[in-house]
Amino acid sequence: MTDIRQVIAERGFMRANEPACGAGAMIIALCTELKAAGINYQQALHVIAQDIDIRAVHMTYLQLSLLHCPAIIIQGITPAYILGFWNGKLRNTQPVP
Image (tube, rainbow, N blue to C red; front, side):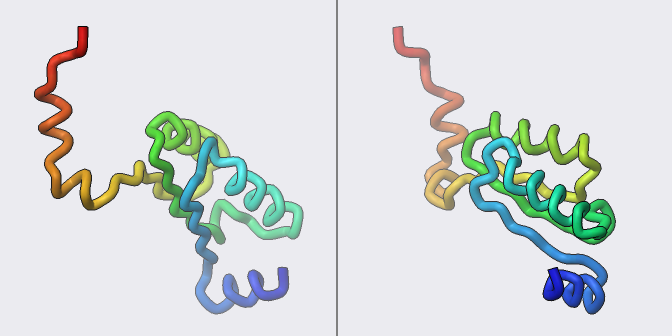
């Protein structure tokens, strides 16, 4: 934790990035370890978490909100999805009988 303490001392906070957050277990574990080390993660940690499954994004949002952990939680979508106008394509399709 010495390096983390140094980063927090210099910057005022640390950052964590979780590219496949699931329900947020790794970030919760990080919060738990920081708290055990005497570091107030609610003031010294900023998280960016991402997942492709919207349910996972919602679970992480709920978990980190309950922990009062400052975070941005993103549903990851590829550039091909956006450039291919898939929102519109999917919205305009008829259900398969």
